[in-house]
Picture 1 (cartoon, helix red, strand yellow):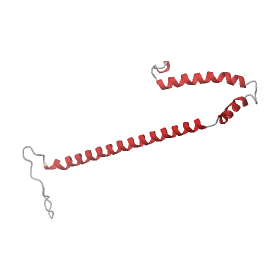
Picture 2 (cartoon, rainbow, N blue to C red):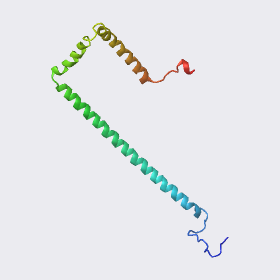
Picture 3 (cartoon, one colour):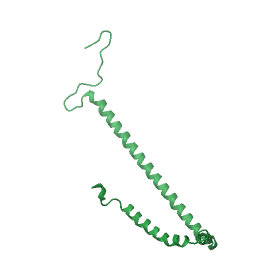
Picture 4 (tube, rainbow, N blue to C red):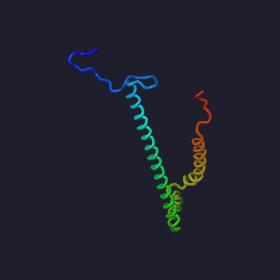
Length: 131
């Protein structure tokens, strides 16, 4: 069908022969190949960027930890006296509650360790409420 006043559209590729891709599919295939190359390049660049960021962050944390540990090791013993002072200061305001706090503190520590083990292990068994 042709419209009056308009030139017919010329096809720039030859008609399909046996074993050749039809002309109408060349644009689709080219677009798919370009899109696949772009997606692969973006994935590769993202992977390299994430790897570099993780390595940089890990090195920073390790250096920070080493510096803090080195500084703590260099502190004089009198620096740690406030810790002993804080423990004895707990007796000052309420002498009757301080011994109870010192007795209950290890129990809270044990409960926290047990709970953290359960959290690290994850939901291995289903609880009775979800059955």
